[in-house]
Structure formats: C-alpha cells, structure tokens
Length: 193
Image 1 (cartoon, rainbow, N blue to C red):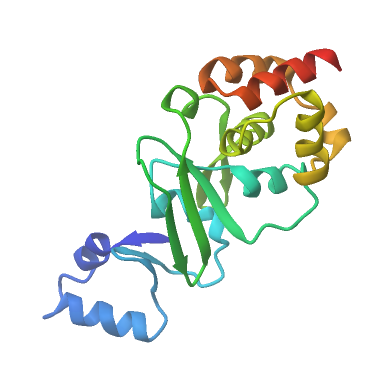
Image 2 (image 1 turned 135 degrees about the horizontal axis):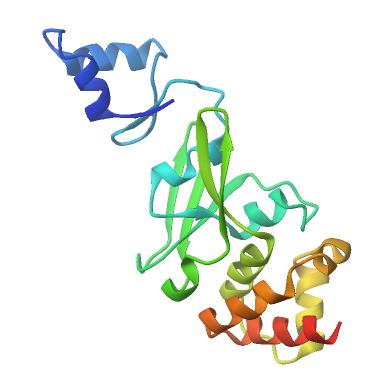
C-alpha cells in the first residue's frame, strides 16, 4: 500500500518521536521508500502500480503502454508516463524500477486514457491508440507514408496484426489534439488500409 510521510506520521503520533519510529520501520523493511515523502509497504509491488503516485498528474504510456497492450514484442523495463505542462522530462531511479515522465500536449492529455484496477491499486494507462500517438509525437517528423511505415514496423517494431485492430476513429480524434505531422500521416495511412 502506498503511503505518504504525513499519513505514516499521523499513524505513529502516539510515539514520542514519530519520525524516529518511521526511520526504524524503513530500516526494518516495514516501509520501502519510493521517493521523498512516499513509501510502499510491499517490496514486491510492480512498479507500474506506483508510477502515477510518484509524479503527476500522469498516466503510463509510450513504450511501456505499447508493450502492455502487445503492440511491441520487447519487454520494457522503464515505466514511461505522460504528463502535461511540466516543460521538462523527469526521471526517478527507485527500488521499484526506473520511472520517466515527459509532456504531451494538454489538448491531447485527457483523451484515450483508461483506469485499471489491480487488487487494492489502480493506475491510469493510455489506450493502444493513445500510446502510439504519444510515442509518434516524440519522434522527429517523417517525410512521407513510406518513412512512417518504416518507423512503425521496422524501427518501433509495431505488430502489424495488432496495428490492424486499432480503432481508427480514436486516431482521428487524437489527430485533432496533437497537431503533429507524424500523427496526421498515421491517420492518412490508417484511412488507406
């Protein structure tokens, strides 16, 4: 369970020195520090369940969400998340893994994100269409459809069958929100196929 320092100190207020008690509990492994002010009680909690609590608002996207949805064959060991209006990339190295955060346009941020519950945890993750658009938004602009196909299927290794299952209407809605050459070309490419 994720807890903040304030929550834990409130629980420990009956002790003479709640902060000292918390330090001892961390040393004993009862609490595992994630980042400053944030702790987890279970050392085996998967990192993706913690990503939204570390830095936000944010949702899992980019390579992590592409792998999660089966669009790319590679295992992704960094928990990649999208934010907006932060103006810079952030990276956190923790006991639970590496977490990175980067901006997408605010107009695009709120569309195509799902909440998933797992036990006592819940997390926000981009839909397959949104994750692909987020990833294409970070790439340099391609010149034509042939370059886009090469980027998608050779460089990014997008599974062509899964790509064929994507919702074209969601791509159209996202295209209007990103103002990105790559996503405009993606929309045209999907219309053709």
